[in-house]
Length: 290
Picture 1 (tube, rainbow, N blue to C red):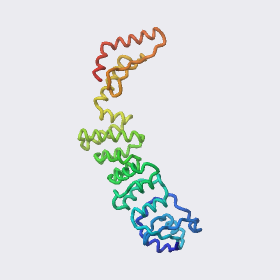
Picture 2 (spheres, helix red, strand yellow):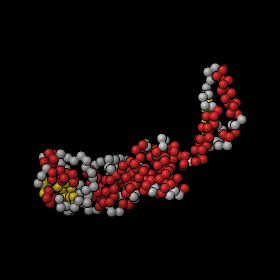
Picture 3 (cartoon, rainbow, N blue to C red):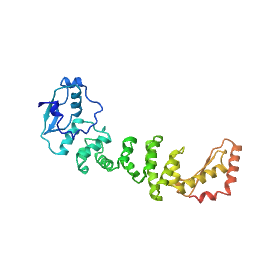
Picture 4 (spheres, one colour):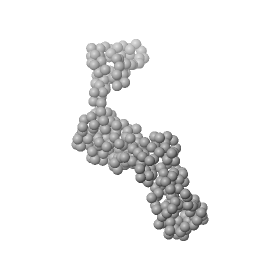
């Protein structure tokens, strides 16, 4: 253990200043010596930049330091993460700086990830690399909207105009709706080889509608959407106001429809039968939808 002046510490290497430190220690505690000694490796400060910055503010002359015999970047990073001790609480910006410090992002392994997340380090490694490889504008989808890197990567085929509109209006969708919307839009753009104007039109029209997910599903599944629309028209034409519902099997995959209703007396039952009788001659048009 040794005391090193602040002036000297400010000339140490700062490449490991990768944590955000939204809650720095009180200067009064540092002035009273109640802080963790700063770990040093050669002329590099491994951890404790938040302490150093507060010491500068408080005009403290020197800080207790401890020199460690660690040289490899991975080992230095593991020590810093151990001292930081915020598993499961690191921002994506911090995670990216962790990868940048390693020089080779692929060098990150499950051992390191165990110090970053509380569970499933293998999955975290995949997410980190996915995030690292995203274009800067797509990283904003992860940091600003909380999207998974895998889903944000789907926007790699989106034109800037369409992506900009999405980011301006995305607040109206829930987390799961954002994922569904991106998956549908990505499939539509690839399937139809959409140009910039077409992309913008699809995105703006669907997100401006009252029900964005339904709007984009109509484009993603035109045949299925048309089938639901025809079923709705059939129900409206023959059963609306009569308490009868005709339901299709999921995704119209099956061999039969389900017609349901409830009755309260014989007269009511007779009215139901009359409604069903009126639909009898056109019932075959429904089976053409299966």
